[in-house]
Length: 490
Image (cartoon, rainbow, N blue to C red; front, side):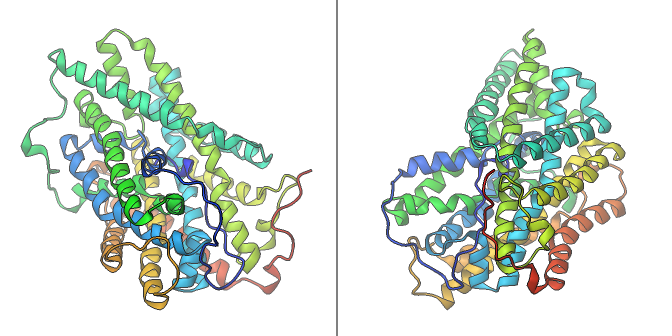
């Protein structure tokens, strides 16, 4: 995913405890092609390309499998839920399971960003290093400083309620993905056309990843995060004239486009940079630097770096306050968070949540300075992000089956075909990815397995399950807010 960055948060509860079908109103219809392009822009990104480039030609397999078993079920199931129940994942899970489970689901949507931003800004730090000094890309101290400076600057901007921030990422798909991605693929082809040998073997025997136990498949977990967020895009299903026929078309087209954007740059990187030299954070810039050097145009490397950084930072700003806003609205209604975290500043922004999140982000950023290998730190935080988010998907798939059985006649604008089967496949894939994430990847090197498990389990299970449980257990009736949901703008 290109950040939850380019997807709006949709976790606010409905005003009634009972499910509501969407009311009749004038609808501005869009074409299924337009929806496919919208979905592509919110999912596609170059950021995971170095991670899969390690596998060379096998990256095709590692992208296609999660697209079939996770992306497609998630898209179709969330489309049925979005077309029948307003309020996002909180209301879907609350109606299908229970309100506490709904809180857990929306908490996980928010909590994944706590580890997501350090991994995103770790990519920014490594990319920015190629603009200043490429040697900084391997420096944990440099990475930690960039993460802290960028995040706290984003908090300052967001807390002022700056209007129009969302527009900063509107061109992100073109500036930070399509142009660099297309350029990378074209130059990669030209690089091979000049007679240079591919750094990764491109033979039929390399279509499947080499098997070295479960650890050899662990990197596939990162692709679940790349495809996550489809439950956000599903809200647009009501804007299609014929959702039953057009939505599947849009999703299949989007899946094809996303696969092209993910796979081709990953392959181009694998042609240019040997796997053993590839940085999981700086791999894109390594490839650009190498291919520009081959063509005598290395001066272009910093320009591409600025483009990638600008797109990533714009995306971070657009989503910085989004998930926390959904959590805030639910907590004010149900009393899930203490009053301190529910307070709004004079601009109507949940500044206390952002600052608290920032303190945790700072601690995580410092881990980059103490973990010897920046790539290992990046990988660990990416896994934790994915696992926390997958908890929400497990709840969503179960809730969808329960709603189909408990409310079969509830109005739905779209009914997913073979819903129970789709949910079964999506649930099994999500659970498998969550469990596999606890296994250190083969590329993790000789690091301590015990330390890896402690960090990943502590981050994913502690933040994803223990913290929301404690909030729920110790909640008080006085935590319910009777104040307006929005503070007036001063």
